[in-house]
Length: 91
Image (cartoon, rainbow, N blue to C red):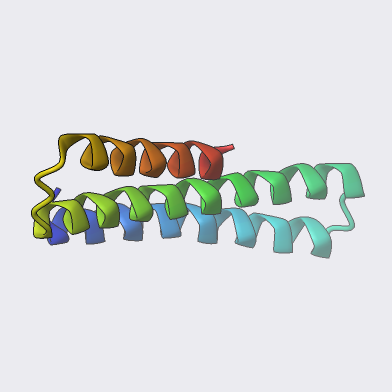
């Protein structure tokens, strides 16, 4: 993914998060029940975690491209560690 593609993707995801926040503000102003507000907050948390995972994934790929690791076992372990961290963030 190019830097421009990453930028566009991140901005789109941030726009979605902004929309969720605006929706929650409206819900609070309209005195909606706490359960519904908490559900929407959970959606925001998930969206932020997925955005973090997306950025981490792209950053890790760029870092691995910049370094020359001759040991294929070491490189595989780094890639596995990165995939594990990304999976954990997405939950």
